[in-house]
Length: 449
Image (cartoon, rainbow, N blue to C red; front, side):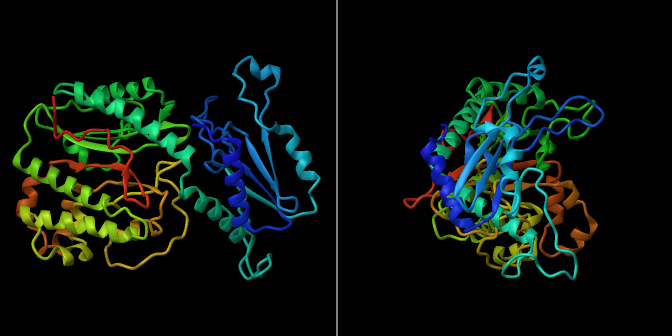
């Protein structure tokens, strides 16, 4: 749902208050399409997310300007000349014509100009120079602080944002339902991807939120396995065999907002004992940590809880030996759970990764990959996506085999190499009354076909 003018005004007012500027002029650019090297074509355009957050617009060239002295915002949007309209449909007109921006800025040329958004110039203070802003802050640091202020507002979703995320989740549900009804041995990963994404679009999504991951068998051990990742010119696709694990990590986008869902299932056969045990283990870790997505909880602690649950299961299965409370910080669990438990979700699928948060400390080697830690607040949307993988690059590495000789039962692990991976992921809204799973309507079958 498109935000109302009143909702946009509220977002801008909150950002201006966080900025606390007095006389400066700020402008944020949505950006321009990037061209394919050596061609006259362009990559699909996505605007810098701060611009649609504050304007609900995002055509190339869209620019939002702020005059701190007057506490006034001005929106500028592109208009096409007749010659260009021969080839391209006109963008929806917003604000003042973009060619008026230069004169608007010239009228304020005696004031400090701060450029943000796409292609922003990031001025740096030369080594040894004193900062050029009051309070000992460099211009670069000033830009970073203003960007962080917008990000802090974007973390907490308002009704219009949540409506769009729910619409994206509903479109994603249509795609996964198609998979459950149609995926079968003999189909290729690519066929499944195309059938699923077609249902995203039929349900109203204008695009996917990110490149879909459709990984069968051993491919499931590659966390970001995508079609054409091996060879953009002549990509390969694997045929799904009966009894394979099929890991699908995909999501539709609506109104610029992403959904992000992972389901793993056995295709065309009942799961083996190992498949069922690990699938149940991952699901249990997800359910328990979703319940921890409550205001005031620290994200690193939620992640560590998932790691301990998974570690205990790996000990029970005979893949690890020892106390999970010790196996997590030493890094043995990270051999099988090598990523963070989840990430914020919004106008980017991995949303707002550059904002400093309150953080604790831990020896868990995965925590250094989590990015800035955060205290959960009501209104945040985060993914929760534990997983277990048998990644050849890790399990076959001699240095790791020696380092974890006492903790890992390598003989048992070697029997599992080629297993692939299991990940289960949902999008969770943090609320005062408890977590709300926005993707709860998407079933979690252990077997299809």
